[in-house]
Amino acid sequence: MAPDFGLPANARSETLAEVGEIETLRQIFPRLPRAAAELLGPGDDAAVLAAPDGRYVVTTDMMIHGPDFRAAWSTAHDLGWKAAMTNLADVAAMGARPTALVVAIAAPLDTPVEVLLGIADGLRDACAAAAPGCGVVGGDLSVSGTLTLAVTAFGDLEGRAPVTRAGARPGDTLAVAGTLGRAGAGIWLLFRDGVVRHGGDGAGDPDAVLGAALRREHPDLIEAQLAPSSPIASGVDAALGGATAMLDVSDGLVLDARRIAQASGCAIRLDPGAIAREARDLLDIDAIVGDHAADFVLAGGEDHALLATFPPGAALPEGFRPIGEAVPVPAGGRPDALVGDRPYDERAGWDPYADWDGHAG
Image 1 (cartoon, one colour):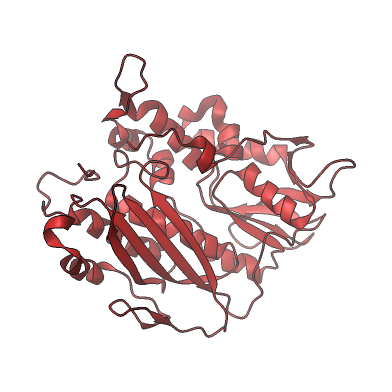
Image 2 (image 1 turned 30 degrees about the vertical axis):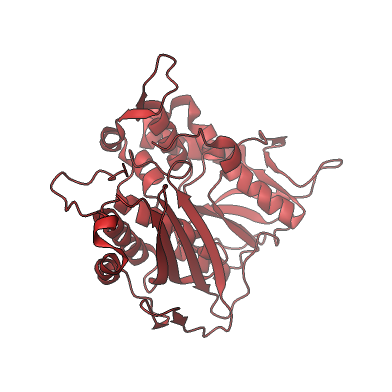
């Protein structure tokens, strides 16, 4: 049986199998946000978008029930919101302004239509909150045994050069906009307290779920994981402020800082004092993190903060705070992320091929 993502008992019970594709789309279209760049939107074989810059930033990301979300924890609105926000953050990390999304959804036949409508509402609300003028211009519906969302996002560079991962130079200031550690702490809490597993060895599928209660008790942490908010507008601000390199912190601060280091051919030194401040801030938000606070900041991931480097002495754009610097590669070393003068665990951060436990939830 397909998950209902916490729909109320009095919700309409029609499934995708009962309603069909045409009627489902008829109900979805009015809920989708229109894109300011849209010349021809949903309803034809393809959309047509204005491209005043002559170039487009394009990115895509999937969310699959199991490794990327759990129906036991998320609402349908959460799924749409997170699917939009994660893609908007990738566009912002290039210094571009998000303009349009294309969304494909594959779902089991017995999925309630209300689930897809909730996803559409989440897409709409995320675009309105983080990227006004960005809308959904098309997509596809299909059937699958596993609920899957695939989103492609487009962005406008507005005449600027893209900000890549490869431009950091020794002496540059490393700065971050957005939160660090909250989403990592949220997923830790959900796995620790959000499921009760059956079976004598405790290794069965999740059966009883406490996600809603956790969300009430630890709203900042759980919300950051299930419905993250990224400082999308800060991507353009960083580009205008002279950012030399930038990316979206999706897989963990150290892992993503290492990506800048490797692409730029330098080392990225995270300031231990700044990390300690970030850990204290996280602890002030929710004391449940305890002694894990610094590890969540360094390796938690999924906050979708923006990590950028700026020329030495440059004024940081509003919303960015210094957290380290780019430095030369140590003698005999290699481009890497360091905490102070020491490498951090290379296994830290999210790897979908190594970290999924095989359960759907």
